[in-house]
Image (cartoon, rainbow, N blue to C red; front, side):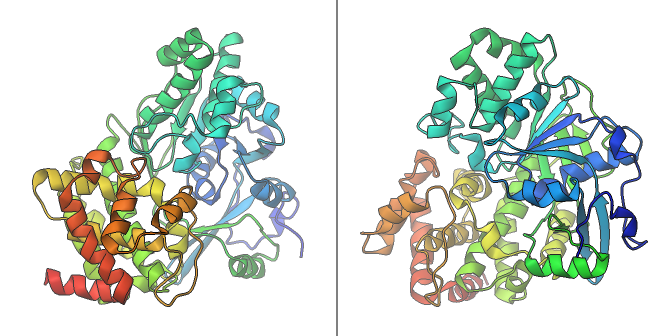
Length: 491
């Protein structure tokens, strides 16, 4: 079967939405670092909307800092791919044309630097996951022991990290008399704009204090919050779409109808008319906090408990009454820690979240969500725990979610089947747990990781007292028994 491409675009069924602009006339005003499925279903769609509206400045040069996988999927397709929006029985296919070029940074570091330094580039977006910023999750400081970052601290001739590429490109722009670009982190980091700015300034200062001062004065690093559920694409998805389209699309993404992008109104150059789904605001933090603690916090709890129980997908976990009860209780606890903006109706947001989680056509895998837990838990679960303990409130649901994450580190589910613990600290945590003989010792070993658990929180006996019994139930009787016990305790 032929591939989706510029040549085969006209062959697609009439109901498939396709670019309404001349792709040959597009200029690339955006460089995106981290060309994964989420970007293709989120930010790329927003810039594609701007192109469809007639503003042809917002094509994308996309880059991968690691694998050539996405490049190899998209390059034979001229950068085109299908976004399949699924809502129950309804499906809508749209071909996105915003991505004009894909660079694999380790293969072509100078090409990425040239794109970042181009006069056409006004905005740089990043979806590199929490670990890609090389920042300590607890303090926000650069992890100087990281070998890639250590190399960038010595030389930026061929950068190896995202902060390294940004600093090197900003140095080129300054030397050429160009203004900086607006750099937008689209990852689930607390205060992601401030953290990205801090990483760039700290690394720049290691090389050139005057450059750091110039970036601080003229650059822009807006805070942002992104929200859309984008499950991993499977071989079955690709085959089913090929049957529908009559061409094969190796780069397709599947997603839900919901899309939200809240951006701090802080830019240092041109920006598009973002349109539907995007909200510019003076303060992103309340939106970010609500999303991290409600959507992402619940997702983590569902992922670890469901994964331990051998349940593959989010909607299947929530088919259990005990699991729905747990999620609502977790939301009750987390909601008390929020300061929502006036525009956010938290009760309606919770209802919408449950409906999104229940969408059976997304088939969002628990193991996909379970990745990189050590990077995600500080903002999703540990921050609301700290806030509730400070207020003297209970943490039963939040503690059960954290205990399930600790149990996940054992690498086996409740049936004894092995699973891969996909986490940058997996080996270190496994070693720390290896010789621990009882539950309390295992909890203490995990709480000792100050890169994950803030030391003040780790020393709080109320946290240990809450975690120990839940981990004991999980280890002895399993996740389903823990959910049943939680419902019994709460009722």
